[in-house]
Amino acid sequence: MSTSIDPAEVAKFEAMAADWWDPHGKFKPLHMLNPCRLDYITSQIAAEFDRDLTGPKPFEGLRLLDIGCGGGLLSEPMARLGATVIGADAAPRNIPVAQIHAQQSGLEIDYRHTTAEDLAAAGERFDVVLNMEVIEHVADPQAFLIACHDLLKPGGLMICSTLNRNPKSYAMAIVGAEVVMRWLPKGTHDWAKFITPDELYALIRSAALDPVDRKGMVFNPILWRWSLSDRDLSVNYVTASVRR
Image (cartoon, rainbow, N blue to C red):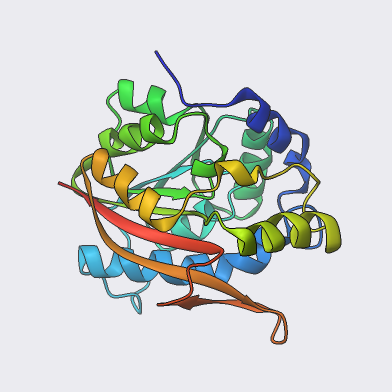
């Protein structure tokens, strides 16, 4: 079975596995970004599947895959909202970290050391695929998105976020986050693998998915928080698309 996994990228995150749930550690940027990501994810799922987010378990009955789940920063809130969650990661050391934290949190989440391609080949199908900050780390983005398409039921929803490729994103994500702020270890990101919104939309369409929305995720250094933007997709951005 072919795979879009890049072993060097997997090794980077494997080395950081134990730090996933430390809000002040190597994954501090993700902890800071998580409320913004969750705002987008929950609103898109609720709109697509006509769910009321004020209810106790609004995503009950939905089968959701969190690709590149890491330590479970997105898997856990999705499980709390009632979804049946499968978390998949190509880095084996991430899985026990995620499993232990879910047990401590009293959550049932099916974490697996596997790839999108292997899940698709096994016939797994989902209502929702979360594909967050993964595509810039794979060897073949098109093959990866085709696997994500195959994992969705007809009418299923994929949420995909990544980093734009331009001088500003280099300054913010590479120089700012890795060198100046030291939020991430040097070499975490490869700017050449960043993808512009138009490029991502083209890849999504080539994978037989229909893009339905995209927004920027913008960091405000004064308020020290992230927010969604309809216009500013210059660095971090997120998209929603539906399987035809």
